[in-house]
Image (cartoon, rainbow, N blue to C red; front, side, top):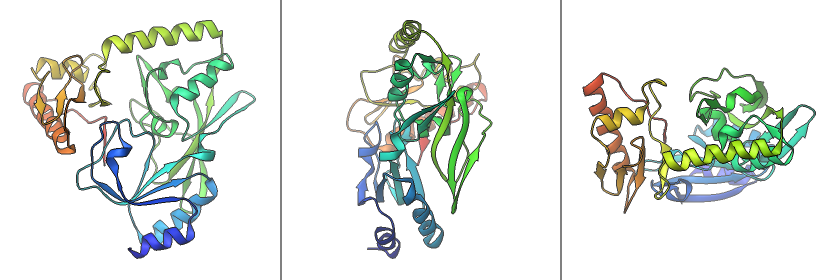
Length: 293
């Protein structure tokens, strides 16, 4: 076992899984292996982890629910980190709510509903965790999580700092450190109105997006509200295009779904073909929304 792995196991309290199949950590079930998969349950273990990272200079990737993460076939040569335990706490305080990075978005929505708090209904139907949503400023239908973020707490090096990020379309917290969670604002509302809004959003998503097969969500960012990626891909005649077990969804062209035995290379090949065709037709280079690791 490499020295950096031995040192981590000696100095950091967590659950360690060497040579871990990354296919278990993402919605499409693809990817090679991580040199080390690590689960931490306490914030106390972050400083020693970051100290080891500085000393040995191994790559570190923090994963949420893996709903929009595509791991390459060659795997990941460092630590893939998942935060559970204390990082899944939701704590109300006066006019704000603390949401740990490991909190699932569905759990956060249910918590808001139980307190008759509105504002984040736009997260309805979006899979993933608070940490991932903060990084990509998750949202849809004119809503984004950043609108309700008061502050974000991040460990960088040997200290924790409070950030007030400038959010934009699919651009959230930018840091080389580890996000532990965020303070969110809310709006007092009526439970029935909140539930009705969520119901309407879920119905729209069910009609619009493919759910019959696994996917990583929207593959590309929209170049503009007037020019969504799905429309460009559809007009390029790419609906139904297939590589191995990966298929451009006939229901929504900005989704690549798994319909059979699939590899990361199948998905990446499709993405490259889509980018080339759309650029050839309109001079627009589509930017991936999927996180490629």
